[in-house]
Image (cartoon, rainbow, N blue to C red; front, side):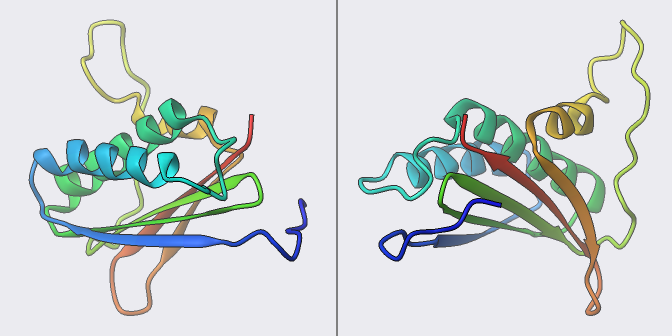
Length: 136
């Protein structure tokens, strides 16, 4: 586990996104702005990988849960935690995709790009999918 020096800060951002297809593109842009800001505490995290993870998680939440979703970004010390919460208590299921399928690979991509992928049940209902990315 990487320890934070006293001068490093953990910065958080949280966004509420509607259950619409455009939410994934908004989440991707917001993540890019979060990572590219001056003095970013997680500047060593691959922005393209983070944006792909966010896109997949938000797309899954808006497509399958059909509810608002909350995107939370928390970074510092060479890591980025991406959390997407939705109101559906069902856990996402990775399913094998055939060569002809146009979808079904998102969770495999998220898992491959993340150092940790966890699904947390929310006592108030719904779930949070958390992916952690480490500095390259």
